[in-house]
Image (cartoon, rainbow, N blue to C red; front, top):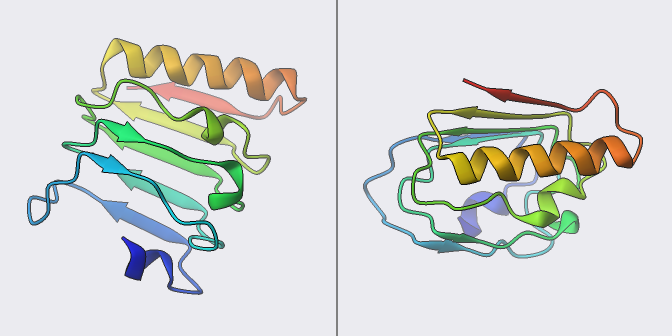
Length: 119
């Protein structure tokens, strides 16, 4: 992910069912993913994901599909001012609850356009 995150014009990143490399934790490096607007993934085996809002300063949408190993969306995702959407497909109840907490946080910060979609 370090090489991908360093791509200066990367705006959309979708990683689905990546069995080539099993990763259980991800801690992005500050200064990467600076222009990323959409992140979509299954995060098949991801258990621990730490994010600070500075690591994804342009993120507008987060789409997770079948992320069964992940317990919650990192708190730092909820602090991203540009975030407009979290969409969850076939994810666990704890992940859904986490997205709902982020929705409350975004609305409390005046981002009334923010949406959570549960499919």
